[in-house]
Image (cartoon, rainbow, N blue to C red; front, side, top):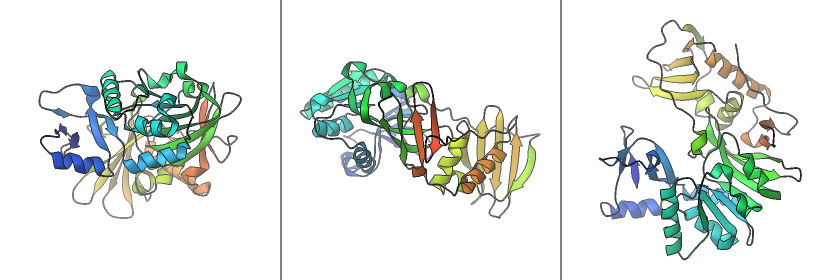
Length: 341
């Protein structure tokens, strides 16, 4: 088990060192980090990037509810991890009906052993989950436990008409949505976003880089805003999700300053924006680069308000052989990107 310290460094702890802590973690409703840095060993038992975990039990339960899995259904899981979710799927659908794909060979082998010790033997395949597992298709259900920026079309192609695909989904701006797609008879899948409070690690091939703030913003243009950054990136999940749909390539982060003050940073390519929040109603804005990112964020937020502040559940995702896009209410109303010159 790995714990996140205040310094941002992940440190390993063994069951022998803290048996009570391990037991509390297993029965608590929190995610448990089980791998860091793609399994790369460190001499001092530390790491930086979380690369595998056990999800919060409450989130696992919610996802299984959205999946609508029934006994006898064929199900494909993307991301075996510890094997716990595969075990739950096997209990419902039957172990011979479950195929679970894990990209990390070490994790896959550990999951096989854990499942065998529990008396279960679903098929655990070592491979790239983005490719699915065509040999076991067609599936009635596909469930992913890693976030995708682009839902692989292989998942659609390997699901029978009427089948459901449930996947965490996000982009550079926001990684917190869950989409439930239904495959139609023409090889396309459509469906709503059913949650915006779940955050998963990315499929390894779709990881989003997280650049730090620039050394300085010398020469940046300056202005002011009354839109608080929390309104587009923290307090209102619906607003954050909608803004992210319009600005999928923009990365945002907060940085503490003195006292209750903080800075909100946005980046995309060589463009940067910083909003300094110091407690008053008006905030200082600095922008630099070919794009005015805070101006784009304000415009995306206005668009969301003009649409009636729609909740995440009014948005959906379309996945066809040739394209993929988010839409509002109906597939005929795609959400376009919002980019300023």
